[in-house]
Length: 186
Image 1: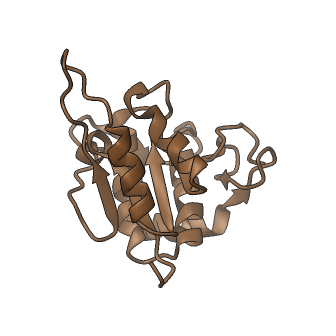
Image 2 (image 1 turned 90 degrees about the horizontal axis):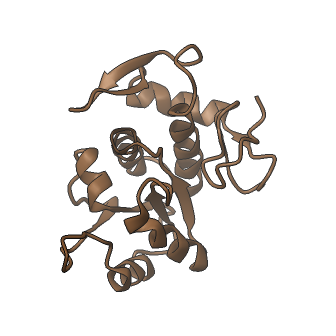
Image 3 (image 1 turned 180 degrees about the vertical axis):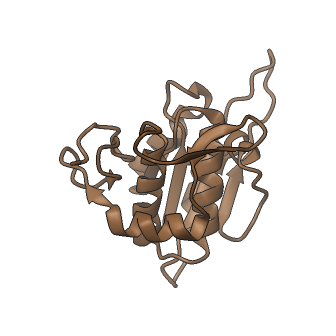
């Protein structure tokens, strides 16, 4: 992607939770049915997808303890030198974050999008007394009560670098969206 726009890569379960379908701004990785009923991510397809989508790709993944079937997705991205944004562990909250980040992907360059995403996913970890909340989606996930555009402007202004990994960051007082360390200064 020569224009510096980010391309998102995420798995189908998170995309479905966020109401996302295929679009130019993101690629959804399917989970084929396996013998025994499991639906693990196809690692070969993940590597091929990540290698084909371009230099400004950002992988959105839930933490490995929340979704072990996609744990390798983030590892592959890191090995290929791509940005990984750790989504909230809860599926509904991860869907909200993915939908929000996909909305922003059409407007922001890759670095700006990653910073916005790091703040947005960190907001899910903050208590309701720090950020006004509202229900979202079928599961009524407890998410920040701000519209996408207002939240976007706010995320750009409040992003702080992580004191631990120095490459990530997020909302002050929230865990880093890259390394999950509780080191973003408040």
